[in-house]
Length: 65
Image 1 (cartoon, rainbow, N blue to C red):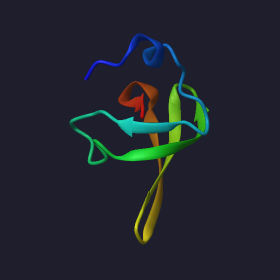
Image 2: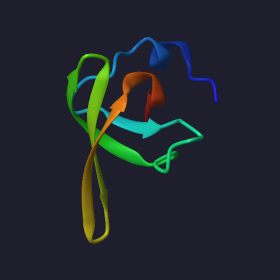
Image 3: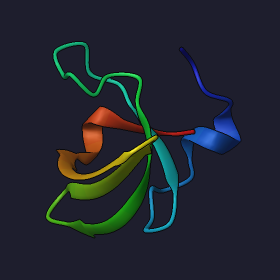
Image 4: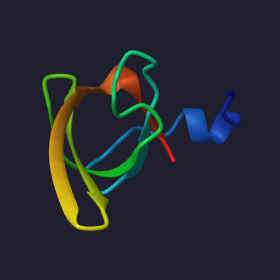
């Protein structure tokens, strides 16, 4: 899916809502909130019903929601 030019130029920052885009990941398509960024990886908080999970993923697997 292509993003509009303005959206593609925005960096992923803590507090951003992101979607995982990696077909090999069990989190593909999940939407979460970036908690922190370090060394080209982001800690993303996923919330769903009765569970919360914090996962560290490479930035290249994420896109802004």
